[in-house]
Image 1 (spheres, rainbow, N blue to C red):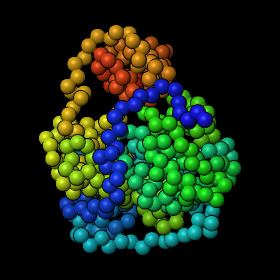
Image 2: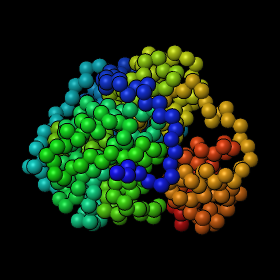
Image 3: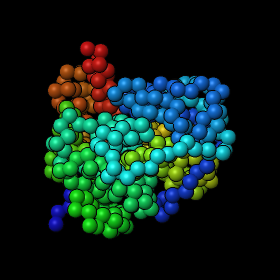
Image 4: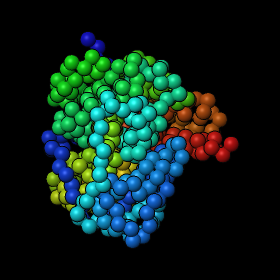
Length: 438
């Protein structure tokens, strides 16, 4: 039987053996908590607290500012010290609420519900109130994703359990340790789309997760575990939709246009927490890993905790760090400082003892075509990179530049070590900014 996959892709060293056997450990923060008001795509939340206010765990401190926005809650109890612009892991700055953690962790009251007693609108509202967003990195408000223009056309709810990005093991540990919550969260979503089928897609290098999730959903006629081929970027939306359903989407389409909705594992569990437990999104699992980390770990982390604390709780460094990355090595953000807060989209702190990108010597393109073969978007990265460097926006668009998903396959596979993805990404950003101005 042919394995479910997509065209293109690469096979980088996965590094998952460093942390995959590390059970999830609750991390108790010690320092101030920094809660960004913008942890999502769309408008930043409007602050509801001021300096001197005392807040509780789970208290709403930032209210969604428009349709594409998300609520923000306090992850600790303590006193608001003020609001400042702080640097985030991706290098941008955002308004943040600074909270002095009192260490008491006094909580607001949560209202539990059986989802069978809730209407569809009540389910969406509980997801919205909880501030749930896509936790695979995009940060799109989940209540909006659960409200497509034509809900009756949704045929597949796909849970992205591929976790194809090297080194990351947070989703893997979640599936091993809390499979029931993942199943129940998916059932909540399926209630909104009564004719849809639920797929849990897991790469075949995670046989234990496939086994546990298959056993967990046994008897659920509407849910099926789909083992997919281990290949990067198998977890990309377009790749995953094609692998599991055979349907294709492009840059002008949403997954809903192909009858699909895709959710990250942690997002689905957060939907369960919001709808069933009544709990807002104030924690997430973060993998702290890499060859330079003394004690790699999968931590259950409160939003707003400093990356410095993550590394400290993982035993610090055992080797000199050559590079710090938020996320994985393929699509993550290199960081100059660890004085940044964990957000809803933080998946990993990766500390490498070698910087392969910095050490690489760029050479001339030899027109080998490897970048085109590896590209899941089926474009010509070398040509697009050249057009980007020359500033030729019209030709860049003509040759499919906007179909790039910025996965990094072309840069990884290039024998000349050319920064193809970086050049294409920069041009795409310019074009998108130009379109916004029109």
